[in-house]
Every structure is written in structure tokens, then in C-alpha cells.
Image 1 (cartoon, rainbow, N blue to C red):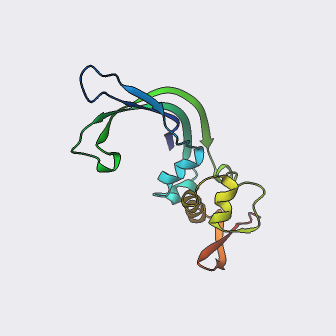
Image 2: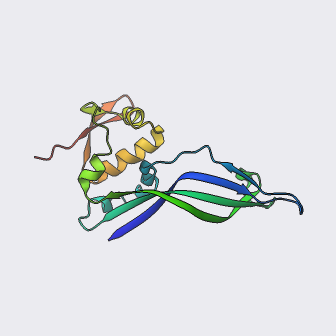
Length: 161
């Protein structure tokens, strides 16, 4: 089974005018997404990673998100609602075919035993994402819990002899 998952590396936000005669605004989103952001979704089915017939292709794209104002909806976005997403370009495709591809995402300089905060620092990503990576890798048998340091779980790579 092959799953293709797009990750918008570069996102342009286009806001349609609220009044007639005005022009739309376009700006670049400050968020920069990465291949590792696929773990936001993989956390829902981490056991599937270890299945021998599962292949994941992460496509890094450039997209436009077109939004219009609807004051009655989306209070978190202050009334702006996404009405359309447009693909502008495909930058790169990263194929994850087997468990070795997933374990290769852990940087080489990691200590033998590590916390998710260590993983977050090494990846240069937020700790919340590092926790999702660790959860997925633990459920598919690539890393294991070896203890705790305070309230934090201590992990180590599983040796494949």
C-alpha cells in the first residue's frame, strides 16, 4: 500500500477583499514545515509503519491558501475561512519505504539514551513533534523505553542484531 502525503513547505495566504472594489492581499506564511511534520498524522496509526507493504511518500509543496472573511465562523482565525487550496509547485518527494528510512530520521549525534527534549533539539523542531516521532518509533519497535528521568521518558534505539 502506498500513501502519498503532501506537506506545504511554503504557504502563501491570499485574503479575498471584504468589500467590493478592494484588492486581495497575499503574504507568505511564517510557518516552515518539514518532512517530519508527517508524524502529526502518523501518530493516528503508528503500527502501520512497520507493515512490510506500507510505503509513504511525503511530497513537499508550495501552496496558496485562499481565505474569505465570514464573521460568524472560525473565531480562532478572527472570522477568516479557507475556501480553496492551490498547488503552486512540488519541491521534493521523500520516500519512506522501510524501517531503516524512519530510524534514519533520528540524527546521528544523538546520545545512546535520550529524552524527547534531546530529540527536539537535535531535529530543530518543537518538543511536541518530537514526542509524536518518539511515540510512532516506539510503537513500531525502532526505539524502546529504558527508564525515566523525572517525569520524562528515557528512550534508546533498539539494537537489530
